[in-house]
Structure formats: C-alpha cells, structure tokens
Image (tube, rainbow, N blue to C red):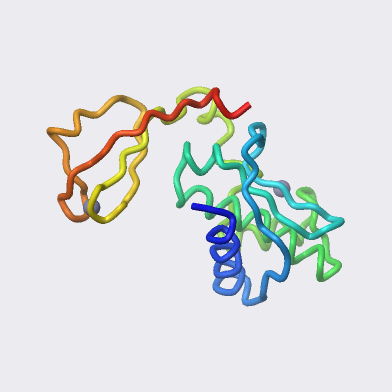
Length: 157
Ligand SMILES: [Zn+2]
Ligand SMILES: [Zn+2]
C-alpha cells in the first residue's frame, strides 16, 4: 500500500464512520515506531506507521485511523479532541477506534508478528508469529498458494 492508497482509505473511513470528509493529507511514516499514528494540529495531517500495518494488518490499522480521525474531526469542530476529553472518549467508542494511537501496545513488544503470508492468487494477507509451512497451508479465502515474507522488525529505525 502506498500513500495515495492510504489517503483514499482514510477518506473512505472518514465518510463511512464519521459522515464527514477528510480534507487533508494522510501519509505513511517509515520511522514511526513508538506509536501507530499521529495527528498534527497545525497542518491537520495524519501519519500512519508502516510498521504497524506490516505487523498488525489492515483490521488493526483501520482502528488506528479511526482514532486519528477522532482527533481530526473534533479538532476541526472545535470540540474536545484530546485523549482526556469526554467528546473524544465518546466519539472513539461510537466509531470503534483503538484506545491508543497504536494497536495493543503490550502485544507489540511481547509477541510481534514475524511473518507475513500473502496469497499469490487473491493477495489476501495473513500475519503469523511462527513460521508456517506453506506447502501444507493454503489461502483461507480461495485455497491459493501462499508466499512467506519475514517481517524484519528492526530494519525500520
Ligand atoms: Zn491519539
Ligand atoms: Zn487467496
């Protein structure tokens, strides 16, 4: 996924979950490690960690995007957009965003996913902590062949 696709993804989540457009920039940050996403109050831009996407996959990152969009929309509407604000807590609950700016922070340091599997046919991605023998397993969606990509979690710094 590249920045343009991320931009589209964020715009789409903004419309479907918040009913409001996202009119600023979303981009990936390769160096972002300590957190999954960031919202910039000056530029209104959103940054998402590539590492989070590679480690936790799209379902988790969607929750992070929702979290950042809570900051975004509340800030623009001049409501309480900080973590401690009631407005923020309520909206976050409504849209089902992640509680933190990242996917489960404890899990990420304890047991990160070490392998990404990708279906050769339908491109579905799977994340595994242990090595999988791809000769024995097929894609859960289409039974296609899987390819393994080790996730080197320490090359992003
Ligand atoms: Zn936050
Ligand atoms: Zn498949």
